[in-house]
Image (cartoon, rainbow, N blue to C red; front, side, top):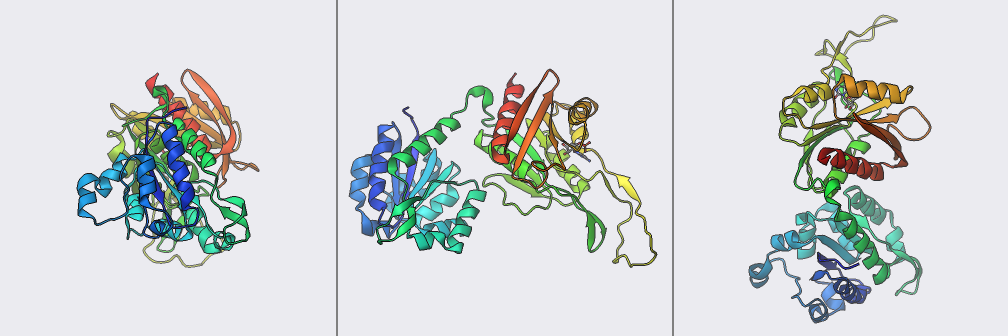
Length: 402
Ligand code: C5P
């Protein structure tokens, strides 16, 4: 496999920095154009001349260097990259990335990059196992960063454990597969299209301290946002209250109530080619929101609720509406109810999933979907929500282009 891609390689200061030279050689062998960025401490381990000779490009290490900025400024360098890989990534650079610090060229490029980013950690096993490093790595994963390795084995410090940089051939293979996936077939691409996604639960206030809500975690909607980004779309994510971090590069609109979600989605709908309603919108909200906290009184109490507007159905009623996709979370008669919603709400596609079962559904890492459109259907088997999101986005793109 040879690729005609731009790979930006960030090298931070660890003993494994010498292995990055081999990486440059392997990337070049695959046909990639490679540029190398080094941190100050990486310069102590290996000479930039090595990388310059192997990549055929000058090496970047200064954030505020007028000559370098004239030749290719940091923003241009970030834009140039089709993939950004940091190998080796020390505990320090991982911490900086996870906190969004931008006090040198490499960390600034990370914030400016819009391409997929990969991190190959390398450090002493105790540093890798430290809870702070693990939290930082988890945070990067949540931001959609691909973590490659580390491997287990003998370390330069004489210890044995996880922390060795993955072998350059393995890192190269991983990146080539990822870049290959990025080169989606035209029918699976959403390149340049605007995609609107609503996600998470809504909160319907009863009084200043209480609200009605549901168990939706927002995971499916957020995974769809990431998958749509990966397929080349510009993504607007209208999100109810969740504890997730939105993928880098989405336009995030935070809302609380079904009413606010309705307003945000309808105001954006016509700017988008696709709308995916993955939110668990409250069907009803309290007719009266008490200004003061409701006091405990009688043994029994009742709430008067009013039906909320159906966002999905209202988007589908718009003239020149986007390709409209809904979800149906059901505890029974999944196929029947899903197909009924497809027709009743007059939408283009519906993704049905079971809820209230042992695996899958709300607040779970896994899910399975049965997707229906007017002329066909497809079952997507139980897998992680991110893989499922990728498959659903591919299917949406296929039907959109059909
Ligand atoms: O009718 P039901 O609530 O089961 O339909 C689920 C689908 O409708 C989901 O896609 C959900 O986001 C959407 N929905 C909506 N507005 C509502 C209720 C549901 O957009 N008020």
